[in-house]
Image 1 (cartoon, rainbow, N blue to C red):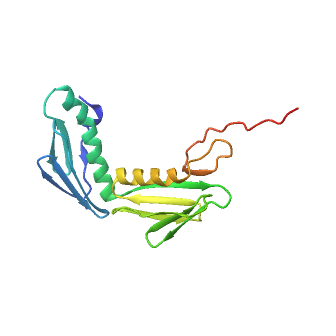
Image 2 (image 1 turned 90 degrees about the horizontal axis):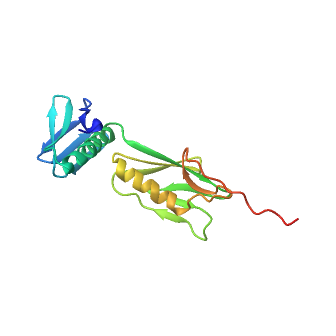
Length: 179
């Protein structure tokens, strides 16, 4: 049995959980998330905790046990606290700004790149070079942060580009002059 899947999921006071078969709907101060879990697992509410368990001892049920527990735990954390990814922009003249809800990035191209956030995700900019992607769904926040990073991924020679905060860029030595 999965070690991760065995752990019960604590539900904070301000969060409400609705179970309808394999469909889990969680509401909290940061929003509402809903997900249909795959076959092979069952979920039950036990007071202020949620328990995910495999339906059988089949390989498929055991594989999905820990995954489903983590998905539900991320939903609970997302609606109660939310998730944030920080990206740093490195490079002369590279900067970002928020216009309305859109994120506008100047990253060395002949044009500015504009991004519209999906529902449940918001962009914020600190000091022109730090972009914050935040929302209730960990999956959506991670995907949008990856899209922002894909505008100009960091290059290995000078490290210019958009990177996650704390990400290490493997640097290469440049050309050496002729002797």
